[in-house]
Length: 292
Image 1: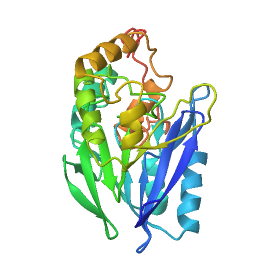
Image 2 (image 1 turned 180 degrees about the vertical axis):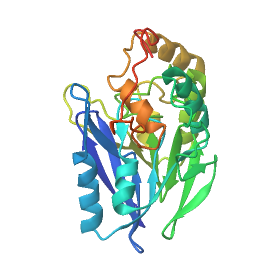
Image 3 (image 1 turned 30 degrees about the vertical axis):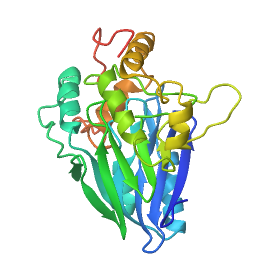
């Protein structure tokens, strides 16, 4: 726990996602980071159980939600940002490079003409280094691309929400083979985070625990630099890129990539309904191969 803030994690075992509520202890102003919308792929049904847990916590703690922060447009879970906003308020925000991601996926999914890849679906687009307030606590948005072009980390009160830029030390790093991803860029983004003070607390967006331990989500810069299996001190950029490129070539497409991206580039809004009042997701055939 930071000196001025409280951080509460919410782990979703279905997708390995960790969402967070972080709040200023003095003003009770809160931000929600990377909230999950439950989705049953076989039935095509969404549920709000994960989001409702966050809403219940915020209400019980008497928090005022100012921000709903996305670290990037996730490919492995749907965002509940729009649903939570409808209940608790707050501004939905992401990095300004979401426009690049939207442009790629508008073309891939042949989205409706009214969908504009201009970031207007979000309430705010952060620039690299932009500073904003959570109550009386200063927050800095850091651009950390590589996993996707739009990844942002949020730094406040001695803590960083790193998104998918880093995983727990025994898991390593995220893939860099999504459209616009790049292993060299990812290495440099990770080192940007690892150049922060050693005691800085790091909160990851996903955990895929190896056998022998349960889910975890908090680490430190010092621990990552000493133990991260992919990027500990002494691993060169060339070594990381070679490892990451070879590893990515073996990875399957994430289970929920087709539904999640279509929702997440819209800030958690489902696609507009057809004439019958039903929203539909698109599945592009023979476009995505064994890898994304």
